[in-house]
Amino acid sequence: MIRVAENRDPEVTLAQIAKDFGVHVGTLDKWMRQSRIDAGEQPGQTSSDSAELRELRKRNRLLEQEVEVLRRATAYLSQAHLPGKGSTRS
Image (cartoon, rainbow, N blue to C red):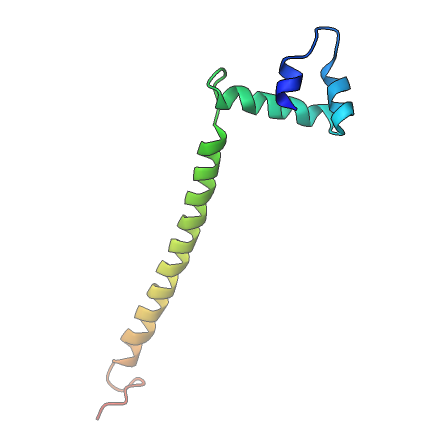
């Protein structure tokens, strides 16, 4: 659809192409802009960079959760080994 829009006749509007394909003209415009960014014709964040950033943020959230679990486990275990406070040793 993007290629059709990019290679359209001058008298054919983006609105007509969007209507023919059943999408909003704003959506088609956004896709065309992203296509130009991905092709290096326009500055901006490429689709692959966006996907990588999403994955890295997801991984970061997971690592932050793991750190929090370890922090809580460390605090719990350090309290369990204090004399007179929950220790099972004699």
